[in-house]
Image (cartoon, rainbow, N blue to C red; front, side, top):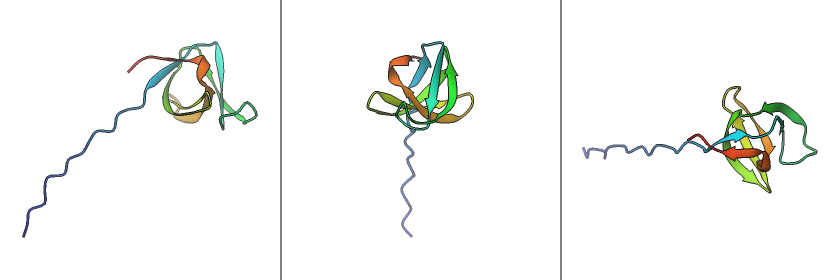
Length: 80
C-alpha cells in the first residue's frame, strides 16, 4: 500500500479587525440605507470585516456574534 502524503493545513487568515469610530452605528441586513436595521454598534466596538460592497462593509460583531452591513466611512482599521 502506498502511504498517503501528510496532510498540510494552511491556516485561514483571520479577517481584518475594525473599530466603530462614531457614537452609534446602525448594523443593517444589507448594504443599503433602506435595509432593515438589525442591531446598533457603539463607539469603539470591535468588528471583523468579512467583505465590502459599494462603500459598505459586511461585518461581524465579535462580542455578540451578529453579522450585518455598516457604512465603511464610520469604521477604522485597527487591532490585528
